[in-house]
Amino acid sequence: MSRLQAGQPMPGPNRRRGRMLFWYLKEGFAVGADSDLFPFGGHAFRAGETEGKTTAPNQADMQRILRRISEARRQADVVLVSIHAHEMKGEAKDQPADFLVEFSRACIDEGAHAVIGHGPHILRAVEIYKERPIFYSLGNFIFQNDSVTHLPADFYEKYGLDHAANVSDALDKRSLGGTRGLGMDPKVWSSVIPHWVMEDGRLKELALYPIELGFDLPRYRRGWPELSEKTDALENLRALSEPFGTRMEIGQGVARVIL
Image (tube, rainbow, N blue to C red; front, side):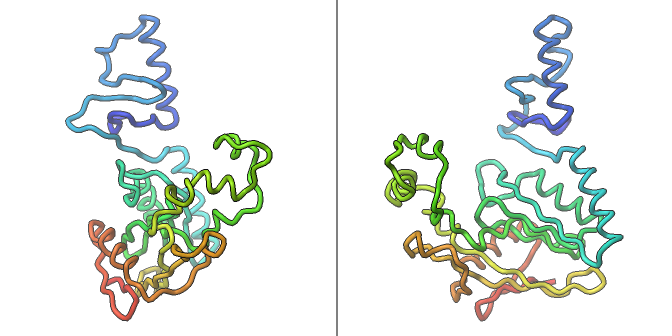
């Protein structure tokens, strides 16, 4: 509870506790002065020096996953943890949420050899934690969001289209003719492929190769990865990773982590 600040959803049992607290306040069995938490809309608010929110892993989920990692360590030579997480820190989409950092490090502590994140469709930092890699997001590898052949009825309804509309009509309406939306962000269409070597559970080499998925191509042709000679994604990744203590050198179209 001590980590909750303004606007943070209450995790697990704490959320139920928040609803109970609200009920107690409403019924007169508790008063606001008894707690510095104010429950509202399923969230717990606490006065702080700065505006914002913090997040933490749900402990029941965290313990369940750690038990699986412990089991996997006894059943395999290498344990990789994959996590899909869109959540961000503040309003910075390229920054992992607090809970994701805590979760990833806990997985390594438990014995995972690497944590591989995805979900926000763009690159996030690489951290070398206890001589093992954490990829907070590797962005997209294959991204064919705009080449589907069917869409559900509620997709058409959402954009005010009737039964006579087709997939192309719906995609044009969503993107306002290719002028807005996820597909208009160049960072969605570039990423990296990591290649690393470990010995005795310790990272020895980590190289990152840039790929492009065809940002400038028509939507029906883009989404397939190709190795790229551009270093924009590598430069971006290096800048994102520096606050996590990760240093990279870029040369001949490849980024190599300095260990």
